Length: 133
Image (tube, rainbow, N blue to C red; front, side):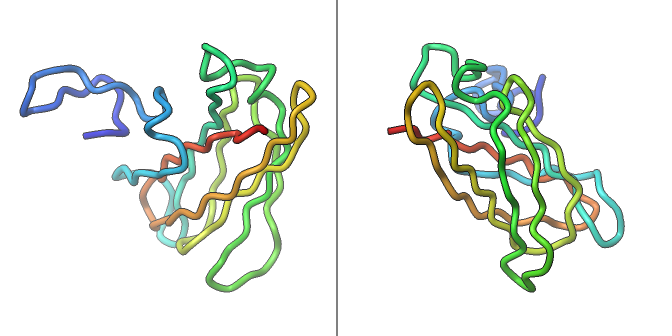
C-alpha cells in the first residue's frame, strides 16, 4: 500500500517507504481512504528534486509559488506556496486538477505541471519533480 507510512508490503514483508521519498514517485499521485468531506477531498503534496542528494533540499523545493486549476469546470485558480521542505496541503472539490510550478531556484529555471484526481471524502497524495534545467 504505497502512500501509507509505516505499512508493510504483504508479499515481501518489507516496510514500504512513505510516498514521495524517492524520485520514482515524482509526477504521480495516490488516493488514500479518508479525509475531506462529502463534496471535497484533502490534497497532501510534496515537491522533490534530483538536483541535490537530499530530495527535499530547501534550496530547491522550499517556498515555491504554485497554482492549482480545476480542469473539469475551470473557476478560480488556487494559489499557494510550498513549505521549506516542499510540502503543501489543500482542500479541493472532487474532480480533475492540475498543479503548476514555475520558478527560478539556485539560478535554474524550474517548471512542471502534474494532473491529478481528487475524490470526495478521500486524501490525494501528489508528488511533483521541481524539474529544473
